[in-house]
Image (cartoon, rainbow, N blue to C red; front, side, top):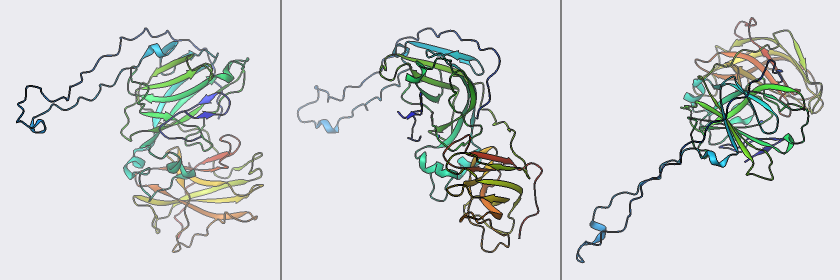
Length: 381
């Protein structure tokens, strides 16, 4: 289990430590789920050789029934002080006084799964995602709202773990995906835990065990007191379907964004336009090069990380401009500002939708993005 800042925990298949839209409107608490039946038993075959075999018969030659694997046990609700179920979009009040709503679940574009981006040395996703989430088969995201109580004393002792499963009675030990928390927003806005008396809404990335995911339920396991694991609650939301990631209001071409705090305070960039590098090959199999023309300046302690957004997912890292291209490359080093092209591999069949820059430290104050809408340029040479 991984403990994250303040009172959140996100435990998953991999260990990795990853804005704010104010939740408005009334919140309705859902009814508790009645206790489920007792876990079913499973048959065990005794592997002991039949005692009726003659002394001359080698027991190893006799046919033996194979061992029967234990049947997966359903969710044991008795392990929790309270189990509550709701539909996607409904709100549950937890024991620490938070109002939590799961709105939807989304999966990354299928083209990334077809490329095997988590299982091939050919690919290095933005911010080293494939290295930090080793063992995952894909990426999903849960759209979550949370409102914090004004008195945060109890909430600070609580821990939370997000996951997705295939059914309401799925066992805790085998989720289809587990929530992660980090500084790079794979989806934006990134979820951040609200301050006392405030609300927030954003995406929590989910490391999926398999690219062929069948998630139908989002879960939050909460320990009311980290020092007392027995005081815990389980909240579950039935998902209507896998949702598309909605487009958000981003900067557009011609707008300059600047970091005003953090390790890269002062770093800035302006998107001038984007284009396909038709005459140049991508270093990644199954992808083509897409470029963004930018003006950029370094921050107090260096340069931000740039990359391209692909169908709203911030996953495509920059690579070197091919030597056969006449496009002037942006120089993202040194102390001077630069003007030029950056390029990133984008899977065939996927749409490049924007540019991002990040300081890899704060998903709010250290992140900015631009939409490609209306800013296409002729292909550079």
